[in-house]
Length: 416
Length: 167
Image (cartoon, rainbow over all chains, first blue to last red; front, side):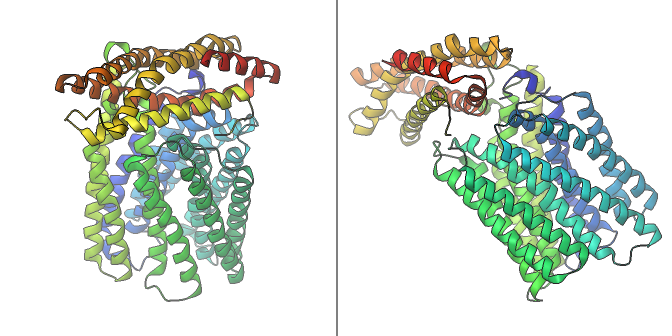
């Protein structure tokens, strides 16, 4: 898949990110269980809920994004990464940095938080530089994907700057209205950095797995323009405190999501492969959650109709959309990448079925959506016990996913 | 996908036909499960006929064309590894395809015994898995690379050569 093996990184590079992401997913659900009492009313502030949020945004989402970008971007841009060693450096800064940062948040330990934040920002910076360099050298063949990448990198820069300000404010309290910055940080992180990477790679991965036609160029450009505009307006609205601007951004966001989903629908309608399997059940659920989260965001902005609406919005966007989507993509991309490394019986290339344990995936596919539903209802009904039950379902689902990933790593190591 | 180079488009259309056959084979195996299917069933007969004819003839030509005409050009352009990997996959797929084609042809004449059905099911299952993954790799990497690499004149020459090899 590398286009050339020059573009296929050593298996250890993407896999270390993917394995870590699956372990962080377990930690996320465990922390959610621990913090269940505080989840429904959560809006901001240090503590275990903020730690849980960052276990998922940094530990699972950004970690997966880094591994996937290092491996997939060179395929999309048809340019190898400039160097491989900085990918490892970024991991060894980012992974322990995320552990320290989230520990510092959960334990209200500012020194640990600062150390973790510094390492995390450095790790993300190395990632950003490598990615920007690769995008700069991109061939002209997939400009829409590359431009999604540029918007994601700009968002990464913005979210890191806001994160540094917010963390400094924990100790010194010099920002008049930190809530505005926090909202800008959240939007840039979820819809800017992660969202743009997910939207961009969807242009490559969904047609690849479904074996469908490429996206119609005019629709793809419209989606990019709408998403970028929505992001810009929403972030400006959040930072400036102008409510009407924030609302306008959210409405634009809904239109952008509709255009993205329209593109995905086109990809699935024109696919050659009819049987898409379990992963695409999760992909469809994640798309529904994406739309639902934006609708909930709009309702929360305009009324008090949904109890604990802020927490619900964040949970649906993170666990409903992102975790579900990444779980689906990882279960397809990991065995696929693994078949590129090493050989099976008689020197033949490995078979996907040699690397895939179906049962853990089935357990994850049932328990993860169940966890999303239980926790969402628990948040709205202000029932911590229901959130705890949902967190247990999510935890068991995440552990099943660890088994699936562990088996792939074991088989690849056997064959290398 | 839609391609600007004719040869990429032709290879893509060939992939589409192969996937259509793969889906028919999958259907047949899923319906019959462990019990040999009735070869007088119209859908089963059609699948077996297509398997016998298409796999051996078209797979062979498709692979030979890629190896002789395309991978060599990629190597000349300094991009040898993708050809090397896809060649390894061809070497694994081709004997499987030939065996499936032979068993399908035999079944059309004599029907399936329980033993020959089990063998057919196992081989076809492996073929389906390898072909799907192989086509995904070609669609994702080989065809877009040809878009970048080939000049229009070379593209026309290759397209003509491919069409002739299919006749």
